[in-house]
Image 1 (cartoon, rainbow, N blue to C red):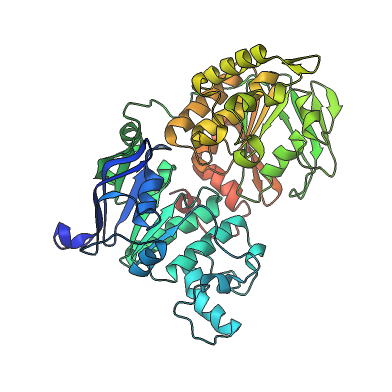
Image 2: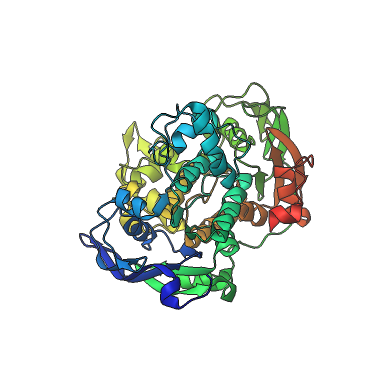
Length: 514
């Protein structure tokens, strides 16, 4: 953080901050600080108070008690605009770009630092340095924003904030929706900002990223803060213990070689949109098969076509030798194939309905008598499945929308137990899920595999796809480029296949994996 006294180095400090929402106490006397030119990691389980703290720092929440010091002065911002004018900017998970505008127009939408009359060419020239800062120097500033990938749009959002020259940049789960290449761009950008003396607050569930960029790490647990510690003084296990208040044990369940005898599901020449060439592979009982690839690699489209939620231009599936090609989800469900999409809020849950109804939705036919729902059978089935997925059964009458991200994901998975699935397709199994719930979900998936189910997981999280599956198929820009067995699976091998299989970039694998 540079030389000088501790007081001189501290740019932002919150002391004894509390925030109540009715009977819910989101923060309980929490403290937080970040120094000049420091990257402060902020971690905690969902519901620990991270979002509330970030909103207070960014001026979005003004109803707190406690002391807020910024640049040596007591502050109480009236709103986010006041905080931004003071030099504090937040890149939130939800995009605020205007899709039909150009990249340059979005970057300078607020008009700060722009001449009253500026041509598109002038805007493009002004935007170029900020695009280079976030690793998008190759993008034409005059290109329509909606023609960029989702990952690139998130990077443009950050470029827009950097254009305001903030002293403190808050990145809230910046890589949650990004593939590996765009995630690396974010991490490199953070290091560049630190090198220029800027302060960064980095909020993430991804422990590897926290350790790669943070100087110090602050933990929130149940609304209370743990004193910040140097990242070099901790490892993942000790950090997780601080977050949970107890030892988690191993994050990933043990793996073992699978006896691959008769495939339960055979995929032959499947050709969904987003895939350049038809693909074929087998899925075996008791196995977790991983589909590795960046966003846009085609892995999501493959799972969707297997589940009947997206169309395929051709190909066949064979379930226990029976040929079919699902044209709708019901076709797959009838063959005991379950599917959890990457967007649980849009596709996986009825957020405004009780948890019980969500858990019973796939099995209405089996828990009904003569077309009438059997309430007792529904309660018994959903209670049993809630317990299996470590969801408190006393919460079954509550709306699914009030659950944490981790519990929502467990409900999205758990609802399929009611149809006794033999094949379970899961896209991004732990996106937006805290570390404790991640470990539970991994244990659940391994437990289902141990009971004989075949699990197919698509993930852009490099740690997850390295440590969870028993076997991996790798995809790059719509093409299957490799298959890795258990003894071949390392982050370096996977990264090489999903980011630069044809060695076009001239960047070493060790550099990308570090």
